[in-house]
Image (cartoon, rainbow, N blue to C red; front, top):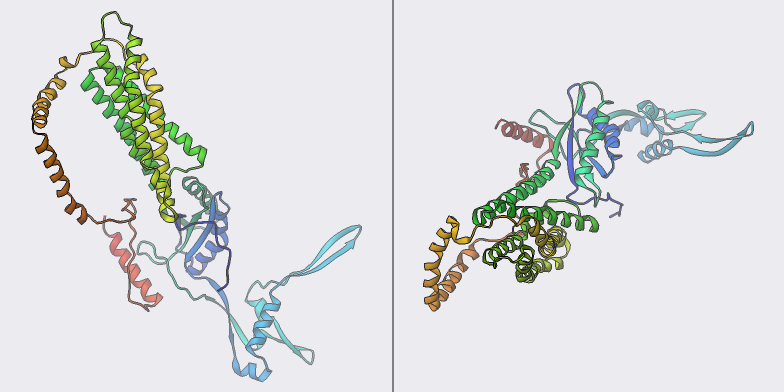
Amino acid sequence: MTPALGPDATGVGWVYQYALVGKELSLAELRSLQDWVVRFGVSKADGVSEVASVGGFVKQYSIVVDPPRMRAQGVTLADIGQAVRDSNMDTGGRTVEISEFEFMVRGRGYLKGTADIEAITLMTKSDVPLRLSDVAQVEIVPDERRGITELNGDGEVASGIVLQRVGSNALTVIDNAKEALADVQKSLPEGTEIVPVYDRSTLINSAIETLKGTLFEESLVVAAVTIIFLLHLRSALVAIIMLPVAILMAFSAMKFLGLGSNIMSLGGIAIAIGAMIDAAIVMIENAHKHLERAEPGKPRLEILIDAAAEVGPALFFSLLIITVSFLPIFTLENQEGRLFGPLAFTKTFSMAAAAILSVTLVPALMVIFVRGHIVPEHKNPVNRLLIAFYRPIIRAVLKALGLTIIVALAALVATIWPARQLGSEFMPSLDEGTLMYMPTTLPGISVTKAAKLMQMQDRIIISFP
């Protein structure tokens, strides 16, 4: 085994893939374009670690020797191999001074085609050179391949896989790669195009849209709950304003620590949104209660301060308890730590921000927005209906304390068997919107047969709408 320096990328760095399609070009020509034109153009894009080429035929020179001629001339295969190696190199010749200027002397000896290889001198007999063409024939043939790339059942193509550098922003890398491909497209032969095959930016944008949708839905729910139970529109603004401020604080902490926005980090914020808003709703409801029961003539500011001071410490420490609940995840190592670490960080940042805002921003916003006519609880028809439904139940429960506890324990025990049947897995399924079909064949199948089977399967799959 020979150690070699690999690309600074990881197994999840596969962010973009494209196919090179040209009806007028052969697979060897498409692969040559990919290896010598497109790949270098995309590799210079910022954040790209490597562009791996797949599919097509890799062009190579093949020397087909003639054993009788070699035997007659006394030439061995080792002589031919050594002669080709010696003839395919540049040589430095120091410098030459001409007219007070130095010029570098260099012997350019790299082979450029079949003619150069055929002209290689193997030996000299009686001042007559024996060339490679005298004992062998040089041909351009495809290299042996161990993989193929097929597109939509239309046939084989050459393809490139863009890998991002470790720590790079995947969305930025994809945008840079697309810009580089657009520039390279202008220099390709007519009729040749670059077709996108896989684009992770779709998944990233979907995750961002999910977070936006969750934030918007949560704001609507908070506003609806506040308006329905308190009959006060301006009070809903307290919670609605507090939520995005807490999320911005979490993003600021992510920026400070160098955490990127990915599925797991955004998922941590989405999980925390529901708990982040609880403190604001409780404090608003308590403020309404104090205003409802306040003595006539007591200053409104003093009432709101008393209401916030009454529940503020309890709300702050309750959110801190939720915050530290994710701390054990930070002890995970290796793959688990890298996967769930961003989620634990963003969940902790969000809850910590909500705890701080619950005793700072929320009381200040209540002073601004909680004003005007406050509807008492007994005058709200929704509250009256729920209280009428709740009071008989709580009375019955308090009268039968032992039975209530026994029923609760029995319900807990009854959940043990279903919980054991659920099963578990380390990686939950992720609906990325991209289907990855990986067929398995019998061992030893040839590349030619595999290509036919793959083309047939692709045609069947693409026939479905």
